[in-house]
Length: 378
Image 1 (cartoon, helix red, strand yellow):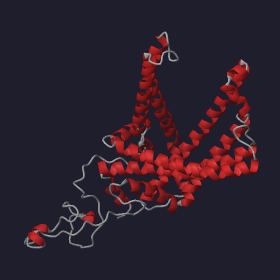
Image 2 (cartoon, one colour; image 1 turned 135 degrees about the vertical axis):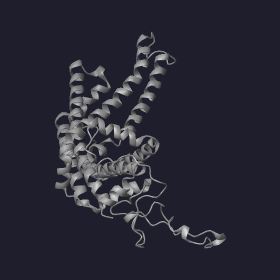
Image 3 (cartoon, rainbow, N blue to C red; image 1 turned 60 degrees about the vertical axis):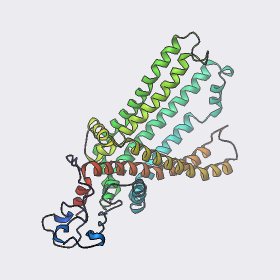
Image 4 (cartoon, rainbow, N blue to C red; image 1 turned 45 degrees about the vertical axis):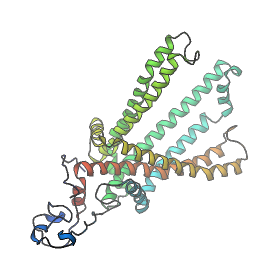
């Protein structure tokens, strides 16, 4: 799906299915330039219909070779397209997401069980006065090491799942199934570039947040009262404003580059090229994309929460003890299964919504629906 030159569609006269009348030899399969229901008006005598106005037939529905119609999409259609992809191609979609989720969760559970299982040691961080320096440093080192390894494993799994599921969604739009082998063959050459993208964008967000905190930290450090002193001090107030500004800047960068992953995968762009493409496609539609992504994130959160409820109940019945006091291997495994199930169900939603948002923006900006219909043979 290579990038097409910018074209401004005329009104709603986008790609449409052949009406079957057989009297349009110049417009081809997609109709003439007068748009939906606009042809043939000049041949009449102007007396048809009420009030002397000629009646025009309703526009034909947009072609739909796959999970979504080939026209600008609404919010519900984007969410339904992501769910329909999972429902229609569940063997591939759930095969990819379940494999990635089980692999990353197994690694995370193992790391937590080996490094992070002694919760009592972490309780010393809440009251450092009861522990010596060696115990505090040991608890901090274990927690940071566990979180780092788990985060890296999760990042690798997210990259692989995003790449493969984007390929599956792009084919589902055309009504073409993709096996796990097909998705892996298409995704594998782009994994290195996608890894760079998944590292660069969070670094930019963190840097923007840190820069916004610098003025408040500088004022607080130079103040006699400091942050913990007079609450009316300028350093604390400036630090709070800097934190809000930092969150806004990070959110803006997140939205600006939210479509970079599908651009990198489907247009074979490099990291910087994909970020530029995302910024171009998002321009003027940032709030809409932000709202849809937040809605998708909320749905993913609810799915994960519901998946954890039964496993938490089973954990309480089986272990009969609070996981806040001590983490047993049984407890870790039961809760890990719940987390893996939630992740396996959530990954297709996240990847599907992002890929369909990318296609929707290209349909709106570049008439991608015409190219997709041609590719589908319609």
